[in-house]
Image (cartoon, rainbow, N blue to C red; front, side, top):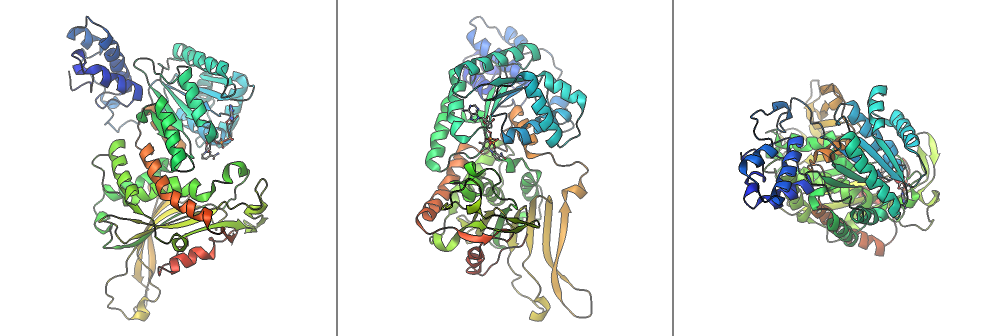
Length: 573
Ligand code: NAD
């Protein structure tokens, strides 16, 4: 019996209550039993611990361990069927906002359309506007039709719409939170959501603490026995180490660390997860994945758009805080980390954290970091304004729309190998890639003229938009002379697989409902990442202004000079 119920079977003696209640609170998936059974087990164990006259028989009965039958297709280790979320609901705060309408609600529909949500799945929206449930359903309908990845099917929509509720109210409004609690309880009764709820905070960051405190005050953060509650937090997670720590403290006063899911939507991308598959499921890359063969690594996230209508959010934050602190440092950690002992959240955290803790900043920050601001220019055939001319931006703003930094990872594998990270808005094109650039061959038997056109070997993970991987190497040009030039070998997701990649938010929302935390950075990673960025931001604050670069270019000349000083150059993605 004990091998069937982790932490629960020895319940009858004494140690079970903490294990079972902790599991119920955190909602971590039971290893040996799938969702529904885990919930039953947790309920039973929790109520069992409260009951004085418990016998082994009654416990076994309560835990439904009397039957020998286990559906193999529901086993968490079985990959023949996709994992489907157990009974649950999602509450979205800030549901009328941009992110909820363009990404979150379409992702929920796509999950429902793929059959990955439970039949009674419920969606509760909370925001300021005075809508009725039907208006809410109409708005979700329209956003889903416009932004969903998969085909719109009326029957899927109908089923989803039946479980939708809208709660109008301000975050300070206690009455609205009482209504929310009543709605959640009503849905438990009418739709069988079993008390399992994820609260998605798609709200301006300054409201994160307030909403979390309201959840606690109104008893929404406490899961009824046997069910789970989880909080999903959007970025930005603080604007420096101090504020991130304060936010973590507020969150952890209400939710256990395992209950908090911080969104870094890059980790939801197939190509990002593929970094680990490529490195650790194969034999041919790891032997060269180190300082003996790698010259340097370049991680680029370039956008071709400007700030759009998001001046209020962006000014004062800038590209380094918005992108390097989270997405690029996560990509760097995945590229540089050691093999985790298992593919689970704790093991991944351990290895990523080791990388982040080993990061060393250059001594001369002025020489090895660059920030810029886009100036007016031409993009996509249209004239576009500079950052300082954008609506809502202070003409004296020092906010960076481009940032490039050089980091080193001080460990045996990477000592002396620079990692160059860059991001920017209004650059040449929208692209995210990680390029591992190799050293030159130690000796060349060819004439120097034969290899004039030969660049460095490289393995490039194409994260977006053209998802896949490129290996670049030298090859003989056909003809009578020996001339060697760069060629590349491509793997494209679109060609090798018939299934299209799900949107990152689809994957991440499903993982939240499943309680799978592999793709969510933990608070330690967030804090370590701020420790890396804070000194750079402080330096920038005190020294000079961002360099200007023309919209549609590849960033300021200073960034090219920064690499040229190291005898290298940026790739043109
Ligand atoms: P938004 O400003 O468009 O929406 C904010 C939502 O919060 C709205 O529904 C608004 O009604 C609600 N709200 C604000 N103040 C409120 C109050 N006092 N009481 C009740 N409701 C209130 O913001 P967004 O762009 O949707 O972003 C949401 C979150 O997601 C933010 O944390 C943002 O940083 C993050 N994010 C957004 C994007 C994006 O593409 N939009 C990308 C990454 C992260």
